[in-house]
Length: 242
Ligand SMILES: Nc1ncnc2c1ncn2[C@@H]1O[C@H](COP(=O)(O)OP(=O)(O)O)[C@@H](O)[C@H]1O
Ligand SMILES: [Mg+2]
Image 1: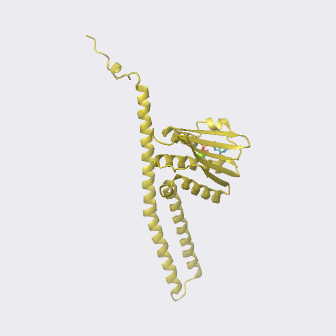
Image 2: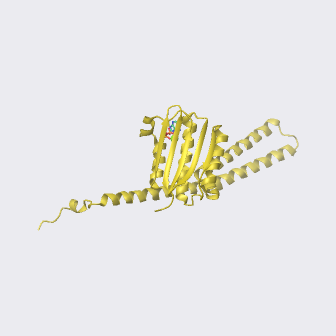
Image 3: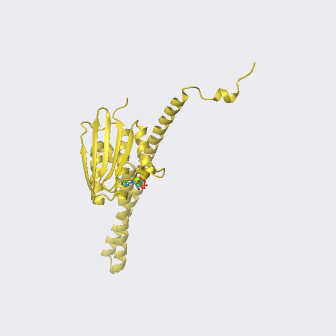
């Protein structure tokens, strides 16, 4: 009797393509969650370890300056100035550590929920860039699912970064709504308007990332541009697990 060839036996069965796709999808989702967990760990360590060392350094230097000022003979003014500028540099480093760990893990999302976190991000964005940023939320209930909230938040961050980098816009409008069982996030600017080749370019890693995040949640992200009128990013994801 002829035995089946090994390669035949290993060949995929009918219908397995869909299940492979499903497995890949689950794996992507799991990987994304692992990345976020890792980010949270790095943020915690940066904040706790480096942040605390820098704060101690600042205190020690301030003490040194005070002691020097009291000492006899009086220290040279240059020495005191030098120390004071060192303290200034340490303060700048403390701020950067805060900023970096805040970006890595948006604690504001845990504390305030998506709606408020988006408002906070918008206020920060406007103050930093001078671009007017308005948030309109029609959500009755906030997005309770953390994976969903985090993905939408990351998409918003990327969309806003693109506005500063590429749009030459004077204003941005962010809206958050629930249409049936679909969450809809729209980020609309009044800048130069993204062009078709930019949307479809394989080099547009940021745009691909936004789409991928939406797809992982069973939704989609579309981006459109009107020359001279602006760019609109629309994200639609199912609001509850089905
Ligand atoms: N809001 C926007 N307005 C105008 N052009 C944009 C906007 N967002 C993205 N683009 C264009 O699409 C390109 C791809 O965006 P992205 O994938 O985020 O890449 P990156 O920001 O790293 O350049 C950008 O380089 C830019 O040319
Ligand atoms: Mg980008």
